[in-house]
Amino acid sequence: MRATVMYKAGDVRIENVPDASIGSPTDAVVRVTRACICGSDLWPYKDLQPVEGGRRMGHEAIGIVEAVGAEVRRIKVGDFVIMPFAFSDGTCDFCQ
Image (cartoon, rainbow, N blue to C red; front, side, top):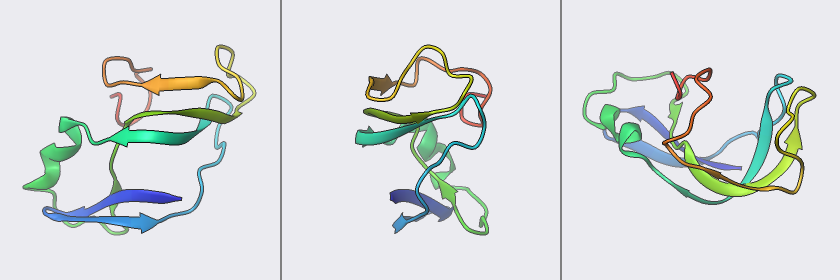
């Protein structure tokens, strides 16, 4: 899949990265059909210290659910989902 990756301040690249997969029972994999970069993705653009392997950007998107973990209860494969900045689960790096 393609991803936007920031390696250091001012160094942003579009790269091929491994496809997403279910890593924990609360995960969902979404095929993104539209995405954007949030202002909070841009905060480190001026001062991010070099990051080995880069840091993926983007946490606002629209897409179709392709897989869900065993503990996911409210969405199912095939659902259309919107991931705006105003809603978060409070557990992942971006939400914290």
